[in-house]
Image (cartoon, rainbow, N blue to C red; front, side):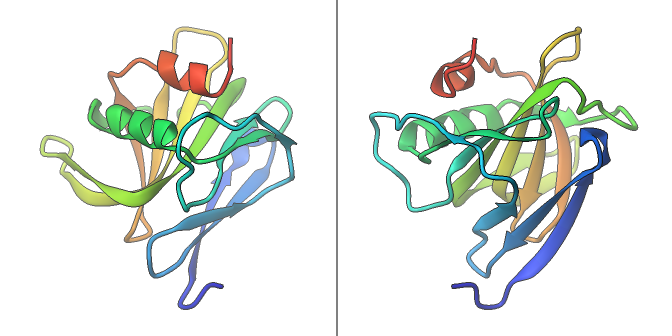
Length: 167
């Protein structure tokens, strides 16, 4: 049950006009309204009391898989957050032909990057992995303060792809 909830609307217009409506409660937990996707298999790790991890395919314009939010996903999220290298400098980074993995963080994680003037608590992360081209993966981060950050990171998404059972 949501008590004092506020809403952020992040328009992913590049997703064929899809709108992602994100809800934060006072604890910083995030939910997103979306179409139901196919269920993914459960990882053999402890499930976290948070929302599920979701895989969104921008070509299909819907969530295609959901996963239990396990300690393995949480550890990978923390690993990727530690490799944030700065803000995205592209004026409109492409969301077309990509897979997006949404990982709600439980509990929210601190992110400090002095050069990019980032010092905040991250409530959820969206890892954007282009399907083709030379663009490296990047992230959309939602803070507890209901801000949205677009960041580059240096980490490898191989482990995340393995957890999500992607080629």
